[in-house]
Length: 75
Image 1: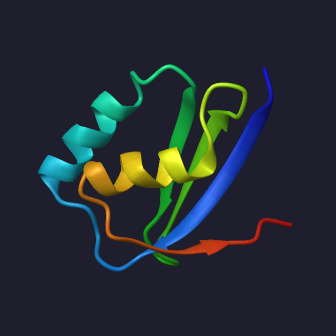
Image 2: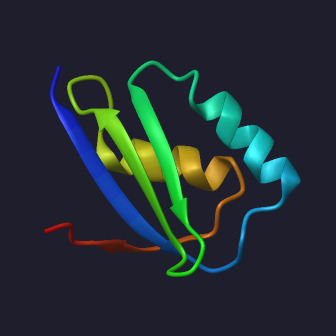
């Protein structure tokens, strides 16, 4: 297992339906954790890079209703 973390800015706070969709996203094999920073409008996703690639993670977030913007560089 190769654990990776990716972070994105998002435009608007997720609503109830988006949060429910994110709950089901956690069931996807390879997604380990999803964290939000509402003050900075950043969502971070920890995932198994041997199972998923970053564009797939972004697509899952978009499919859940998160308005994913720029990908952030993590230090």
